[in-house]
Image (tube, rainbow, N blue to C red; front, side):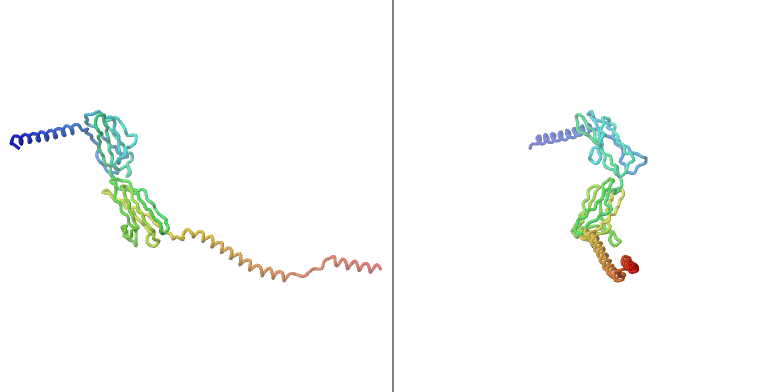
Length: 281
């Protein structure tokens, strides 16, 4: 390549770079600008908290805006205003999450901005107790509110110590996703598995812990009501038999002590009649 050709190539390359930078600058200038309220952490002062988004600049006419929470649209939030709000009334742990205001336009792609509402986890749903037969499968679960999503752990209270659940026996399986966790215990053992199980949810703002009591019954447990009825029937039959045996000797004794036949008045009347006949003669 001659020096002239090399210079032309360098010049073309430089022009291409400058053009790309100018295009990127123009493109960034054409992007909408959205100002938002600050991220916050629950609880907040007062009875409510208002999320705000304001479309400050755009080169295309906005059609409408709406709000989303954790990737799902919040119903009845669509509006045509540049300044949009979403009010949280008495915000609690289940109001925490990842909020997004979305603007749509006639001639350009949608634009959005996000606001994080954080909260310590709070376990609101769990089984307080579970009753199963040996050999069955026990499913224990916990559900929490709060954001960011917590890290879950399961422990068993054993001999005064909380021991973290592991799967060395191959019978324990833990499935956790976002604000939900589940512990599956396969092939229940009546000697090893009964007891207190604890689920724990922890994020950067705090933690929450709840207890679930697992009871494991013998396989004969369903037969216990039937065995109880049979026992009652047997006891009743024995009582009747004993009563009848004690009653029969008393009846025989009463029959031996009964008086003999009593002379009737008809016999006496017959003797009186014969006596009167003799006197007449």
